[in-house]
Structure formats: C-alpha cells, structure tokens
Image (cartoon, rainbow, N blue to C red; front, side):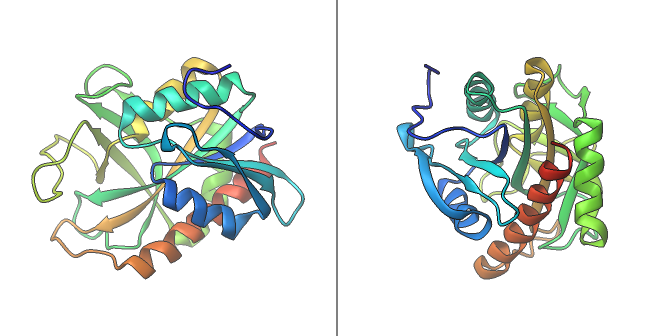
Length: 223
C-alpha cells in the first residue's frame, strides 16, 4: 500500500494532477461520467471514472508545493499510473501573459525546490507534450516555468533568472515522472499577470476546465 494515498476505487493508468482538492472535485464533475471518490486520505481528494469517450481516468489532488506533488506522483505510479498531465496555476513573470492564458509548459526550472539541480531544465515527455499542445491548439501558449519553494508576501513570485511564469510544482512533477518512467506533461492557468492583474474566480474555473478538457484529449491520444 502506498505511503500517502489510500485508494478506495481503482486507479487508472491515465491521471490529471491538480494541487487544490477543490479543483480536483470541479474537474471530476466536469470531465468524468458519474465520478467516484477514490482517495480522501490526508485531504488529498482523488476521483475516478470514465470520460464521455469511455476512457478510464483518475483526477488526483497533490497538495501544495513540489515535495508533496512528487510524493503523490510516486504513490500513483505504484498504483499503476503511467501517464499524467498536471493542470495547475501560475503567476506570470513575462509581460504579455494575461490572466486566463493557458501556458503549455515546454521546460521547467527548479529554483530551490525538488526536481533537477538548481536552475537546471526539466522537460515533459515528448510524445505526451506533443499531444497536449495539439489539444490546446490556439488556446495554449508555449512557455518556460520556474518552480519555486515559496512566493513573496502578497503572493508575488520571488525573483528568478528566467522563465515566462512561476509556480510551485511543475519542475518537481516533471523530474519525478522521468525518474519513475511515468510520461508527464503540464498546462498551467495564468492567474496573475506580471503587472498584478488577477483572474476572477469564475474565469479561473472556466480556464481550468479548458485545460482539463485538453489534458483528457492528450491522455486519450497517447494511450
């Protein structure tokens, strides 16, 4: 039995990973037919079911930060997950990335967190990333993310040397996926621009649903 997750339902080979348990529930209701809770241990809500196309899918919350996400992915791999898409959020660093933009991650750098050595690039699985980019189409923008241990007071990202946006998980998840032999890719919703403009709750939910729909299509095609 994995160390953290205590599944009460089968875990699919394909998974969507989100940080927030509430977002896991929202996406399960949006993307699955009659979703059933598959985990509630440690507050890491997980759901299982089939997509409208009949594909088995797990949607699992990972908690906050890279260490938690990497540990949860390890448990999921032990339970049979072989490909996963992180559907997360990020704060823009580069000007021109407006709130609601879907960032199709082509590369991530760990800044003071788990993943590769400090600042070294980690990349998504090529085949899964290609399918995710195709599913996002013109709705996605490719970019580089810097994954941080923490944000400054007020929610602003700490200064980094490079990157289009900052988050707290993607580098760790991509790196851990490579270690485990799990194909992983990521799409992030920009929730705040570099100038401080923030995404509304309703718009954020709509953007997460668009990202989740693209993730389902990518996972299905890559199976």
